[in-house]
Length: 272
Image (cartoon, rainbow, N blue to C red; front, side, top):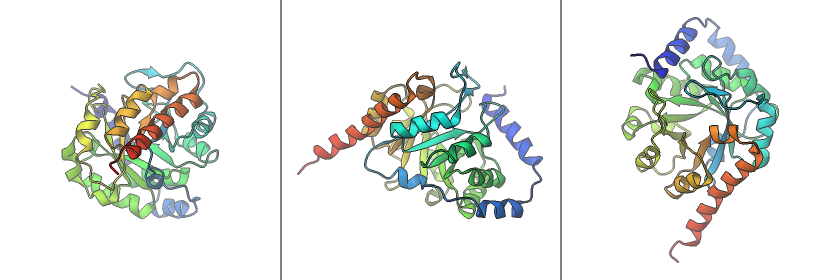
């Protein structure tokens, strides 16, 4: 039986097969792109940061808000709320996003930007760079070993950082960890889209020290951020919670404060 992921990846791979744009030409365009703030650097601060996401809809839940989604307005609210970075979902067919959304946000805010999509080709990474992304999501569970290695190598060549997403500790053995700016642990099953809220904690201990760890999906409150910060996550990626909020700036501020206060408590309570 086909899953959400099967359908999504099939569409993206077919789209990549039909993309005949010159890699050399795209790389020349990428060389002219303005430099963006570093993604890993933003996640290497003492507090647990918030990556706030711009996301119109999902295959499992449909539209996340009845209001018109204006990416630039959202991005400015996230920036004012203290977000460490912004994730922009650029998949059009299944999530309603676009590369123009990413480019518009890049022109409006100074935060690091993550291209959130189902990357399958080096061209996807070059497009991310040209549109203004600091980093791109690379989903280990959606790729075979050869694809994964190719994309991580291509990202390094293009100058785009990567947030490599895993779902279990074994996936960390499939790639060169030094090529990842950060490791994301998605608590949402890629096949069923069900959320396992214990997954992030279970995988966190397998991520080597020195690599920023990002918890993804299933974050419903500031208390969830608190719990994830306490087990050592450098950042939490939050989409649905902020998209559904009637006061997004204030919601981001609350989440940011939760991540900041936990790390301060941990420092204050260290043995003298």
